[in-house]
Image (cartoon, rainbow, N blue to C red; front, top):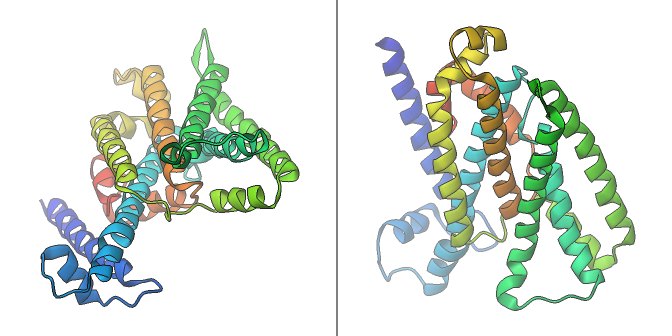
Length: 296
């Protein structure tokens, strides 16, 4: 009982802190916007604010802030699942090569189409790189899964090694693309590899939001099997958990989550590694409460 009350207080405090931080982030930028201007614009339809201030808040900074929170939550829960699955506190979503594959897909789109002189209509141009990044991550996942699967089952160790190898190969390929790229391509590649939320839109928010909801719903259903996996695979099997099937599902869904985040914002690291550790410090190792905590 006391544990539940403590968790509720922690979650409530962090939810409030998240809301205040989100509103404060809207005030940060070249245009001077006060905290109360942000609150007024978001909570009322008052005409007291200048139209250009409402435009900046609601069409530029608010989508960027919401997308930031969604991407952070996706990477955090995917990192938690990876650490629980591999039973390794240093595991993170990019460990199976998904981030590297998605980055290579985006880099191929940036350099390849420009080098071939292919131009897309305006309504398609902004979506080309994210689409290629997503499919790059998806293909990497399929390849890693195929390499790690045999007639004896799915080997997490082989998948881990395959992910590291594919990350190295993807890095080499991106280095070659940097070598053959011109100045404009290099600039685009640099901005892509740094990760950015400058292109935030309500469409990307919708995609990220749906992804987060589906991933959280499924991962929360598998919270108890994940807890059992912390004891070891043999112990989990003795408890009646289909370990091989569970590993396949968790890895594929994690790859989908990482692929979506890379496709909408570029490569963002560290979040999936450190946030799960902070969550465990606050909520403990139980995935049922840990997954809730990571949203804040």
